[in-house]
Length: 288
Image (cartoon, rainbow, N blue to C red; front, side, top):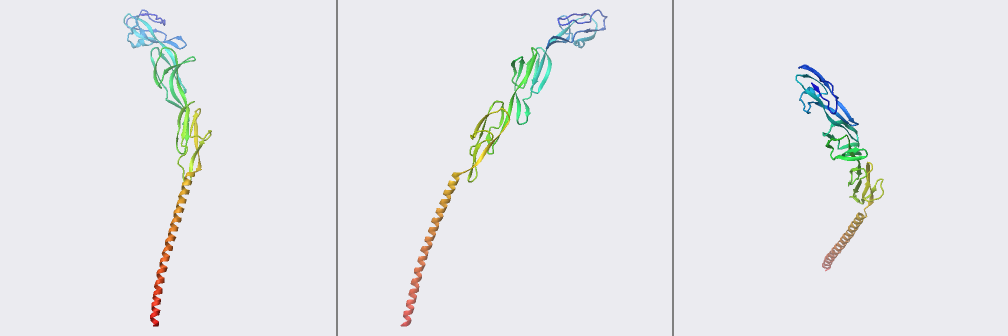
């Protein structure tokens, strides 16, 4: 049996053996080529690089039976060291065969403080010194490995802005750090009798405009402040209504008194005539 050297390694073993005798050949399992490159033993092959398809010959230390002349040499594959991380830490450090792909996955969002602060996935990127190159836009991606790589998941920081508005409004939601949030509420919502609600501003912020823009650099709870104001329009309408009622009442009372006075004069005339006629006729007939 002959054991050949390969460009990568010098194995040991080989020589003359009896037919059916078992023998052991040894080659290095790994050979360093650089700080993050290595050769990993793949299998024993013949002089032409063809595998014999024997399971025992897939190990760097191979023990097998020899029943015919055979020539073997070790075969190696090139591997690169790949580091993968996200803001939570290292996801994996793995050796990948050159030309193979590595599947990457990272959460869509990472909660820092519930309903206050979070990180949202942006992209996968490779860092080479101070240079950053894009690797993939989705949180799940397959990357072809052709060199040592430092891959990281890049995230955007977001803050939650909550608008507390008793009469409703818009603007509550998640915003990226440095993004502008627009808050809006009703300036004069529906009030109650005699009073109306008037917007007085946002607590802790200058101005009294019902629409406000802020640059988001932290979580925020913003309250819309309202104050009660006399609704002079309603008061005026009520005063006119009361005045109209008063005028109507006075007209009604005047008409009622006039009607009663007219009815009183008619009854007095009728009674006088009746009594006079009766007494005159009776007295005259009696004396005669």
